[in-house]
Each structure stands twice: as structure tokens, then as C-alpha cells.
Image (tube, rainbow, N blue to C red):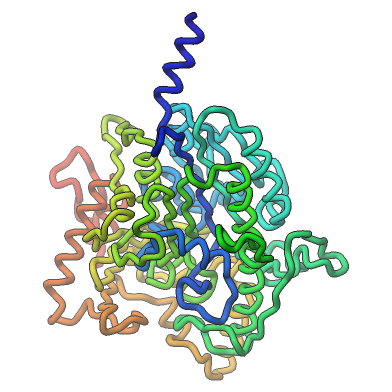
Length: 515
């Protein structure tokens, strides 16, 4: 009798949607993906699956990551806390070895405590395991990241395995593709973006569900921040092919999710299991694309992200575009809200209470929201790349605080060996035209404060921080940014010209270091 009552109470506690059906979440994250899709007005690439998913989604035009680096971004997505608050200051793997703080309460941990089954397939890239536990896990920790992150046939089968082993609990499934990340540094035999992996050629292996689609460098759509050179165009063409592995394929079920490779295969598995009408589907990427001014930068080009949110319960905004500002810090509150789980309130160190500063995106699925502000925070990428930055995007203004502005901006190993950057270096050394919107010197050496008005300067080329006409805007944004740093317990809040002394008043004590 006791066991039967316990099971009944458990079932009554499960999150339910319309008609009493259990709610689920499928989170799809690209690796270094950008706006290379039809839904974001790129007509040079074929992305029928993302375009079809957009028809069942609210499409956010102003979505941003809170940090332009892989592990820190994934940790922020899974905790709702910026990197300076959750402790994942840089990359997790190998010599970098960054981890979130032991007492951080991550999304999979909170969901598990609420009797929701959790799964991850693909690139995890965060730790420790006690902070990020998943019930079902096939990641680089127990498999080849190429197989679980790029082999879409393997990914499809793992999704099927997860869904077929599903019990009565609702689920959260996180599919973290490794495409379209560069692989010239780690697996150069497969090409700059692993675009040759699984293409059926000798030594490349074969992915049965993928028919590679080559692209002409002359026909790629060049972002404003990428040099217009043959090397960069060829680099983008390779990236397009890799993106196609996530998206391109056959059209057997185009009316529903448009069954295409990668994402389409995952969505078809969801439909085949009869779960598509009870599952919130979210698609985004972790950071900017791996090109100059992209990944590791807090410019628009390094932080702006695609974001599709598809709710079977909010069909009234399917296919619509939202101009509301969204942050990837909002994903944890959104998913908790979907499952009707209260937001956590806890302490990581001492008595300071951690509270989510993000918001649920679910209200935007009903009506347009007046959200106009997002924040970003970066400290490292690789362990040697210490270049702390804090930023705010408020309406059409972007303010970046470069704390280590007197040192050159660092370059990561993966990007350094890329054809685009090597060509940029060679052209600079030879004093040849770079066909870029800035010089290497300008890229390396930045002002302490960078203020841009994107309404008149969408390429963020004119720093207005020293313009007296924008002095009031500058001070307003500084105040907003500083308040967010205090609210999120930022250890860098007094840097670079002060030191944080919490037992003194004021807490920011001056260093008199001539900054």
C-alpha cells in the first residue's frame, strides 16, 4: 500500500502540460555556430531543417551568449550563472582544467531532484561530474567526440536509445553537436572544419545518413567581420559543409520537421516516439563563429547567437520573429519554468545567496516582451588567454570593459592554425591588403572602454567612449554593468584599478596603479 501511494504522489508531482500530458525538453546546441541558415537570411547555404523548425518556433533576432568561449558558455547555459559566478572561467579539458564550483546547483542536478530524467549526447565540456550529473550520458568522457558529436547516424541511434528507455518521468535531453567547430588543430586530416569526416572517401569513414554538400567559396555569404580573401572564403565554404551535416538530408517528412541530417534526425526520433507534441525544443549555439572578432570576443560578432524556441503549447507565435533581447543565461530559468520548478536560491561561498539573474523566455511565446538589455562576462578561453572583459548591450548601444587593455588580445591555438588567420598574418607581414575591416594592431590593442552605437554603426567600427556627446550614455551603461557585477558576485568588480576587500568600506579599495 505504501509503495502504491508513493508512486501516485510521484506521478502527481510530475510537470504536466495540456490535457495532463507530461512535459519534456529537447535542447539542441551547435558548437561555434552562427547565423549560417536560411531563417537568419543567409541564402547561400541550404538549411531546410532549421528553416522548418523555425516555422514551428519563435525566432529571436537579439539573442546573445553571456560568454564567448565553449566551456564557460555551456556551464552558463546549464546553471543560469555567468562564468565569473559559476567558476568555469575557461576551457574544461586537458591542461586548461577549469571547473565550476562544487556547490553550484546546475540544471541537470535540479531536474533530477524534481524527478525528471536527464540525458546528454555529444560534447559535454564541463565539470565536475558531481555538479553536472546526467542519468544518460554519451559524451567525450566515455566516447569519441567525433562519434557522439559529429556522426549523425550514431547520434540518431543514441537519441532513439534514450527515448526507448524512457520511463514515466518527464525528460530533459541535451544534444550537443560538435559541428561546426574547427578541427584543424586536433584532427587536421579531416579538414579545417572536419568537413571530410564521414564523407565516404578513403580514410575518412562513412556516415550513412549524410550526403555531403560542397559549397563554392565564391558564393558564401561573408560576415562583415571576416576578411574578404580566398582563404577566408574557402574556410567559410568548409564550415558550410559541416553545418550541412547538422541539417541537410532527405525530405521524407517535410510537413512536420523536414527530416534532414543531424538536427532533423533527432527531431524525427522525437516524432516517431510520439513525443513531439509534449516537448519544448530549443536550438542555439554556445558562442560566436571561429573567425576574427568572433569566438572569444565580446563584440556583437562574438556574442550574438541564433535562438529558436518551439513550444507545442504556444502555437500562436510559430514562425514569428521577436526583437526582444534574450540571453543564454535565460535558458535555465525557461526550462525550470516549463517544468514548474522554483528557481534555486543557495550559497556557493559563505552566506552570499546565489539567485538567477536571467528570465524565463516563456512569456515571449505568448506576446512580444520589452526586454532590451543583456550582459556578458569573459575571463579566459585557454588557460594562457587571460583577458577579462565585461559587457552590456542595452537597446542599440554596446559597452565593453577591457580590464587588461594594455596587453595584446590573445589568440587561441585552434584559431591560430586556421587558414583565415594564417592568411591574415602572412598578408600583414608582407604589407599586403588584408581586405578586413580592421588591422591586426587594432585587433590586438584595444581601449579600456569601447562604446558602440549599432543603430548608426552596425559593424562596431567607431568607439564613442571618448565622445563627449555620449558621456551620459557611457555613465548610464557603466552603472548598469557595475550593478550586474555586484548582483552576480563578480570577483573582478573592482578591477583593474582597485582591489575587492569585502570587510572594508568601500569594498573597492584603490590601487593607485595609474589606470
